[in-house]
Image (cartoon, rainbow, N blue to C red; front, side, top):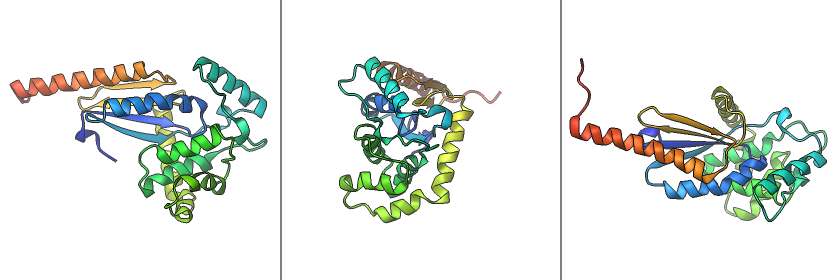
Length: 226
């Protein structure tokens, strides 16, 4: 993972892999990654949903999908087939996505395959084994046994716990949330917004401010010590 010092701005995307709004935010995320690739670091971190954030029934899940799909003007409806009556959490899919980073998948490919399996195909994602079954066809060279072991490891679980705690420490209220920071100490949080224009505007402003400081330093140097 690149450090903030290597580029002027860093954007951290807090995502829950079975969140419908995160799914709808993916086009904006992909667009700004492409647009600002040369000057911005991008990373994603898991922010687990708790029981309060999960649907209580498949019928309720479908209602939420109709709402988000209508708001985003989607030509298709998401699939609630992943939902299991009585299951209190769906950490497995997030653990597998996070574990993928240890196998070179710091980008979005593996977690998007998991999200697609759940939210478009309605595949079950309640266990690590079910999640591994989703990604096998798309990543034929991947050592899925090692990936499954990593997903079930205390190390990966701790990373997901820490990233979820960071989400709450920043007092973010929705998934997705985006944390935008630059080298001069500016910070902005967009929690729940999925608009490319909103996110791009904040990133651009962060870059403009960082460039202005860089230009001033080139002309006048560092501030006097006293």
